[in-house]
Length: 234
Image 1 (cartoon, rainbow, N blue to C red):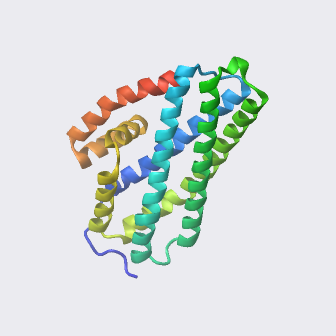
Image 2 (spheres, helix red, strand yellow):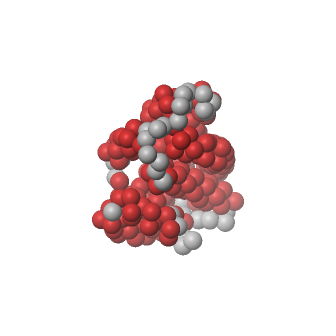
Image 3 (cartoon, rainbow, N blue to C red):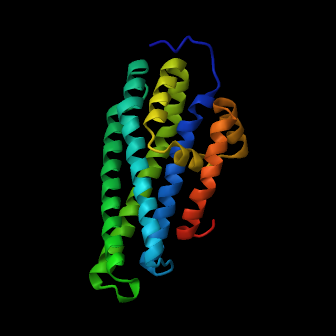
């Protein structure tokens, strides 16, 4: 198939895809490191902060399932249509499905540990509580490692293929579907702004305009307060 003959364009319309994956990778790694600290006894949460932690993890798991579902339902079919031989699509789908299963296990383990902490504090934890905490650390480490490897291997090729082979209008329609389906675009945007470099923020401002970014930044201050309450200041 011949490359897209539409006018050349900068990769700014791919920036949100790149940043969204970068944010998810960062957030999963942060949770994995934190729960490993809980298991090792170097990090601690009281019952109130465990409730905040539980909410943050539920939101992260929802975001992960949403991103992987978006890729399976929209990105891979779009790329297969315009660039059928460019990427190993069956393998990408299999890895995405395996990641969804790891997210489910990490969510289940988190809910189990949080149920323990709701019933009794860590100071009176039972041997079963410690076993579940060890399982929690293992589940999040497996997810962090697998997600990191998947994103590291596939992000560059996806960006290159979309940029070279997918018409700008078709990719824009995919992004519009994603924006319309986000349960809370402010939260997703706030996390993107938090991780983006100043140069990337300016690229987003040029792409989206100043108004969305201002809302993301305001929401980001509230989100960081919740994160700092659990994870501490980074």
